[in-house]
Image 1: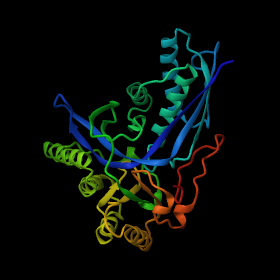
Image 2 (image 1 turned 30 degrees about the horizontal axis):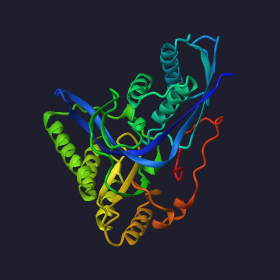
Image 3 (image 1 turned 90 degrees about the vertical axis):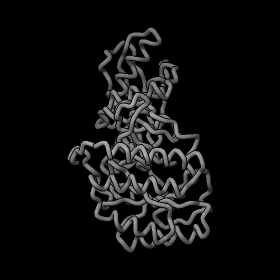
Image 4 (image 1 turned 30 degrees about the vertical axis):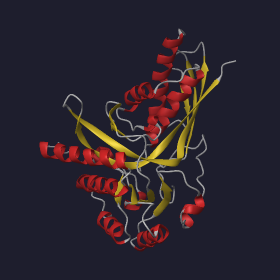
Length: 335
């Protein structure tokens, strides 16, 4: 009996920092630091069909083309490692990650797929191997295979430029969506070639973020995230961005973060600051007053649901899309 391989991958809540940085050889390299988010993710099941052609791969739902490419690449590599001929198989995916908001939905599908294929062969690929296959499958990927460790990650090369530390500073994040949660067509965005001044600015932010992680300094991380978000607005131009930063200042948050390739955003709070419950509730009211949909309040550390205030949108339980349902661009309150 051929075993069914299973795999899982999380999502993220956009970026804390994204730009162009220098690698160890002094070469310019696009990189990002994502904000981990507990909860939503992608799950994959893969059943090999020995004796079928290597291209005989099916996927449910049928629109997950990047995941199919990842499955084919993973089958070829796993078959070679185990001395077996490549074969086809069936891939089944379920996910509760909204599409098009910049939360890494496609990367999560791809990583879950690679892990499921490897599991069907009795293998456990390293994060580096998963990243290499993910980039080949979708040209650029998020560092979700690293399971939340804060790293500066070269998304187009699938490699870590710098490990920033064991964990991000503790944060409370009030999630929201700009542009009414409409997906962002990243291919239609203008491309701006960064100059030397831009690279120097990103390197300064990298230094500050490294210090924030080393010292668990939430306000300093908020400063970095806000500066990165502001730079991202030169391309994304979300009309609510000024309102969002104004709300952050008024309620005593440490800053804001956004998805640089989507609409999801967050107001960041230092959990050690006094009056946290009041600040978060004030933030939720202010977002509502400005017509910015709040999505989910979460933390970068382990907590209980009783420790944070939740509005009606936050009490709703996530409902994964069924495997036979094509995933559509989600509109809020999808989170």
